[in-house]
Image (cartoon, rainbow, N blue to C red; front, side, top):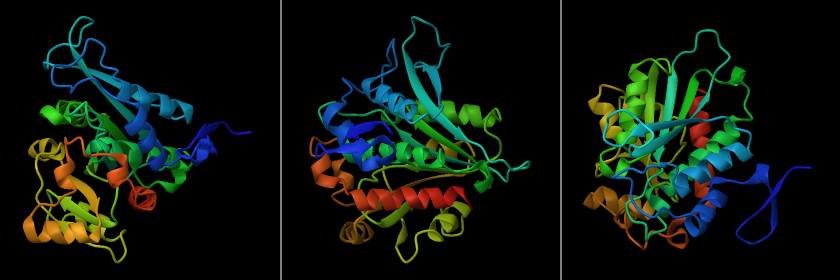
Length: 289
């Protein structure tokens, strides 16, 4: 018999049935970091990062813990540190076409917020994606998949910089697409930033969302900018309800984006189970291209 966990309605649920929505409720309500990651920590395993690792382990998903010095020096026992967690799924094909990377930053800016949209929902969606990919045969994958839970996006993207360093050292093969996830708790209309409508990342995503919108927008800083500036093919993606997408198109901003770093960024304000499941299924389709 499978292990069980408790969902938000206190009903028993099989561990294998948990989704990003369930993880999101748990993280928003029960898991809090005491500060942002700007200065690093002697022990970089924050409560949020510990939750990610524990959840992956409970599902039997191998991961790599990647510590880095918070001042870009040597990572030593007494230095202040940050940390990424990396999960890799490999195709069984002898000559994989490329590697696709999904990232979501696990650090927070405001310890007094649930940080639902920024960026807990994206973290939880990627945990859910990991559980689905763990059930997929490598024969079904045409490319390798790297899922990165990155640190310190809120102050310069130092976790992403470490990932970029590893990519350029050829640790993950030829990376053809890097999708950084932000603000993915609700909505079934998609936005993308950092790419034009002829890029491979744009067309691959557009071809997998059916009749839904894929709008090119401009957003504040996100970690995909670091990757793009390093010459890697990167973008940031997220979702919005149609009404909010129309506002963003008209005004260049919307109320959902204004939740970032705010105490109003709560589970109740944003989380939508169907939208989150739809988003993860689209990511799953992307990795099978």
